[in-house]
Length: 418
Image 1 (cartoon, rainbow, N blue to C red):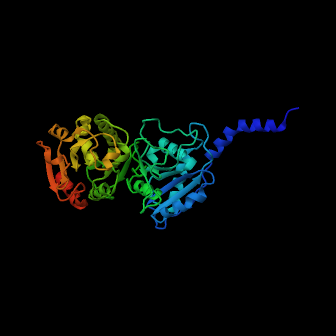
Image 2: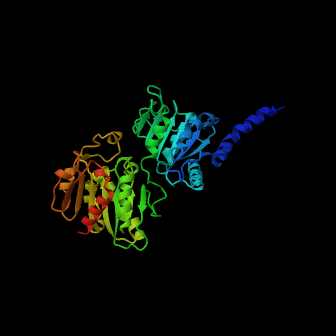
Image 3: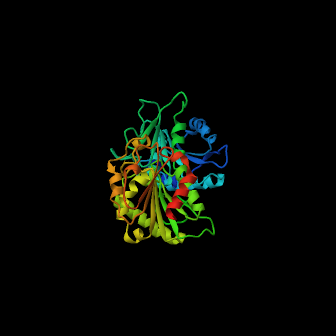
């Protein structure tokens, strides 16, 4: 006679993958810590192991006092399947719905993974890097079955490890990671690790490109209704992402009638590009945007790293786009650059060996360039570059030229319409 318990065990084993799949597809049950200041300026999407809420929620509460919406979900133990047993797109969709319900600003979340859920948080970021700002993990090792980044491969997004010095952490040694340790001022490293990610790229919203069909990390600053014109601009940010400097200048240019499509270089150049590839992406974005915006003339703007890579891409622009180019504005380009984000760039170190001055000097004469830099910015390429159609100006201040957004916007407008 068959053992009925054994039969039940066999049936359970056969049904386990089905049960797991159904459980994974269910909408996550979020614990919500609303921001104490409305609207929430950032969103923390927190993945916890089963039973992890009790220990984690007190550590997350300070974020709600720092203008963050906290969405925490306990996940079942990760399986051994390639997707770690989670439907990550569904989790992101559910988080976006909660964001909207809470009235939070519609910005990509920072993903936080605690303990055994750190591997799932990493896998979510790996599969959907265009939908998250960055990743924070608090774990000694990845759980079994979650695909860790291959040895030597770069982190899928900017990744912060929150833990004490000397302790083994999931992510140690992977390029693109940075450790945050407890200090007297910040005894819980989770807080500064999160804030450093939430505070950068603050205007980037994967759904905020005005319906322009593109896979590039683009945000649109539209011109006001009734403000006509023939031009629009494509603006490549610095390596910190789409931040207040780029945001304010773009608002002023758009308010004056020139819409701006901003590219987050932090997202775009996280993986290495080539000058030819950058030119092709600019042309692809132009094909998607020009008709929708009703503008056929193009202005290219770059700040810092974005300004440094543009001169290398310009000679590779398709002839049609080059003919419609009204001007190029370079804000604080550096003397040398690379074509991929490296952590050293955030620390003020040189990010590559390609000669920006030589690239500027070699530009075709039909390309008009305005190069602006601060008098205290000793690494700028502007003072050393030359060319028949190159205009240069030295302004007060350092790399951000005293954040004189209105003055910079006026200089750009004056260059485009002398």
